[in-house]
Length: 348
Image (cartoon, rainbow, N blue to C red; front, side, top):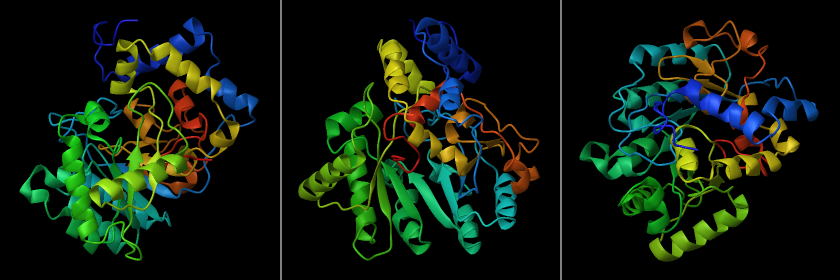
């Protein structure tokens, strides 16, 4: 199959991506559609439980252009959440007891109102996670104080590090990314992150660099901890192993590398009903940069809005959202394969 670009379609066209996924699974590969798998496991329609996380994408601007990025983020992206929309998020949170807010991007720190939002969220007493790509910390002197800012506000830092070697990391995220990531991790360690009894949580995220599923999360964590401490003196709390979903740039990579069919078959074959019962969309509400509501960040990138009368954060109503059926499609196989995958790593 030709790449999405070679077929004359924009890589970021969600409707085209969904057409490719559904057509290939159902017609070419003769694999069951995801909702059929859920039905067989007694899980369709998939329903939410009490929300535990409000995940907010504050914009698609990023200082990196990673080959696996499902957001298609980069320095040229102009989609940025305004302070007005952030205030709507704060107003919605004030109506609920959702304990955790997960800030993501792009590089969320590049939003000009990022620090204000963190401060306001902490005033509401919510736990704040920031998905930091690490290199942003050393990209420009205006970001050098981010570790101290995070420390001062008790922010939990979740950082992407594809591997503990330069070759694999740079192949996925760009030349020099590994060295800059190590510098940033040392800066975070220096203010207490990842250190025993500091209370400052530093977690790492591992995504496979190729067309395969991640290995056992505990084993990967042990390897990362051993090598990063030995080679660089770096410590961290946990490692999250996250499966790459066939969305945006990673979907294009699969097609261009002729790994698409094989990867989808791997995901479908590895479907785990136990993981399906614990998928993150059941406890998460995702907010797009423009305030639109989604069941998860991946649905957000595919323009699959929530199946609810409440579709924007300005109209937020937890009770109404709690009655919805979660929107699923073929990419959802990525979250239910093997040990499962979520923004917090393996599910089982």
